[in-house]
Length: 127
Image 1 (cartoon, helix red, strand yellow):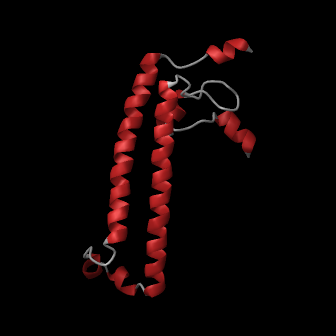
Image 2 (cartoon, helix red, strand yellow):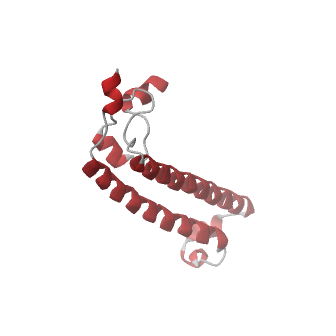
């Protein structure tokens, strides 16, 4: 059991993941700004003239649009927070270790979901 706690990704691997996560944070923050500006400029974005579907919207769907933008922003903020937490785990050298099984999370999974804290095995156990 004790050897499992010593299993971790190498510093080289951690550095690669750190770069990947920093890139994702940058893109996520950019996307969040786009969501926020779309929310703030809901009526001034000029799409009403070019898109017939916008003309079909009634007041109820405008409210829905604002709510969904708000939900998108909240989800994006959580994603950024999760990515920043992953950077902290890299600094602590605990990154990529499943919080349930204590085993290393598959590298390919981490490349797709760099803020993952569960291995596929542990995720499947939850369902």
